[in-house]
Image (cartoon, rainbow, N blue to C red; front, side):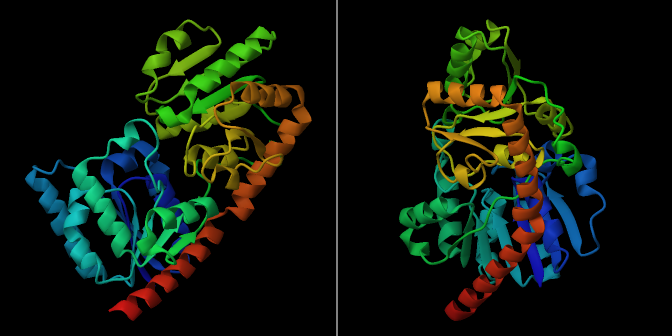
Length: 372
């Protein structure tokens, strides 16, 4: 099968899936150049099999004539490659919208990473991007989401695609851990990690409240906050005045992520709402126990009492209790870590996800043939 894979965001996810697909198919992956540079280290692009081609397109504003040039390049790629299916990660671009009439001639698969906007800045969707999103979701032959709960919610939000939404897990991200070493953790005891975009839905305030609770009990914990976003500002002074907090305010370079996770004893995810989580996908792959809230389909990846602990959302006391439990039980934390890596390497391996995705392609082909 010839697969045209378009991903102008989620570069690490897309290249991991494309490599697994390329074991059985001819794959052409088109990435956003800026996103690929931010998410991938050099070796993540090099060394691909002959059955996988990778090209990148630079983003331009709508009024820049080079944006039209991207649309022309995409049309040329489609005509040369002649795909059997087109798989698009839901990341909207003007030049992608321009070629949608051509893409509709092929079986179209759409992966939706966020079926509804997160609270905070994500709610501010530009009007034309909302139009593009509706077009893509309406015209897709098959829609892929990450989690059974998200599958149900997606069909409720968009009844027109009911029966065409499939749940396929989110695969592991990051360089991964050595399974043989996971039983002997090299983390820094008491070191907590809050990672990624700092938007309202991430629940940073609850993590800080949990730190205060633990300090009041005399617990030695340190929280590293690594990322940037609009919800950081309300907490900036509080973080800066707390010697047990370290703020790394940046989009963390791909080459630095491994060290952040490997130092961490526990990854905390006190989200107030969510779909699935790339942070959890990294924590699994690096073999780090996670404490997360029961929102979206996060519990599909963070298995309670197996790879981490699930606590109620917006409950700082419950979060603090869970952290304290893992601090006091090194054997339990190590067991969670081992189960996390096993889950990343076996149950959620990209080869398994590629086989499920291939099945989705066949569904898309049948649906497309029946409607054209």
